[in-house]
Image (cartoon, rainbow, N blue to C red; front, side, top):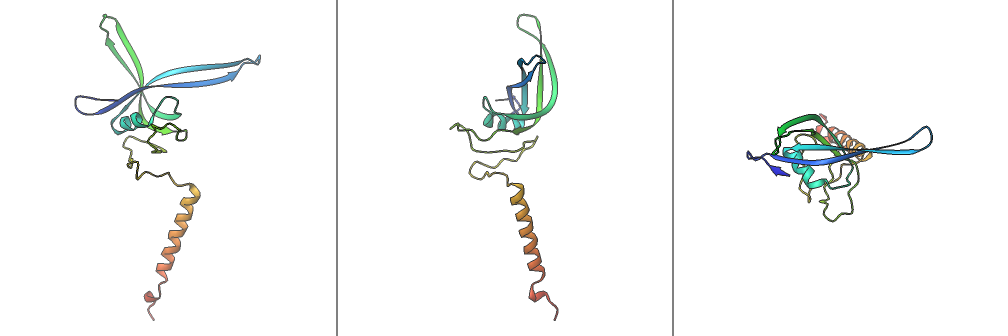
Amino acid sequence: MRYTPQGTAVCTFGLATNRQWTTDSGEKKEDVEFHNLVAWNKLAEICAQLLKKGRKVYVEGRLSTRSWQGQDGTQKQRTEVVINDMVILDKKSDNPEDTGIEIPEVGVEPQVAPPEVATKKPAKKEKKEKVEEKKSEEKTEESNEEDIPF
């Protein structure tokens, strides 16, 4: 990760995509493609903090091709994926360098709590229980004896 002269964070990194298939003759094949990714602003800081070699991630973004003239005078070109969304797919690793922050989805302006405040996203069942508990509390408040007009 680095910062532009204006102070904007930018993180450039590589990503490999693998695919495996079996041919009609039963031979197993594998293909790997390498991609250049760029993240900006808060997403760049999060990528630099959380992504390590081997992490499984989902990214979304747009393709951008840059051209420039190299020091040797040849024309250079690079196509990059400028990401605007990133989701970590694997669980927290046993790597001691990991921060312990789990971010289920990160967009252009992600909200990340400090490590001591960050918690896991509650499961759907837990969310449902909390909603039902809240409804129960509201019903209890509505039927408070002091609110009855007689």
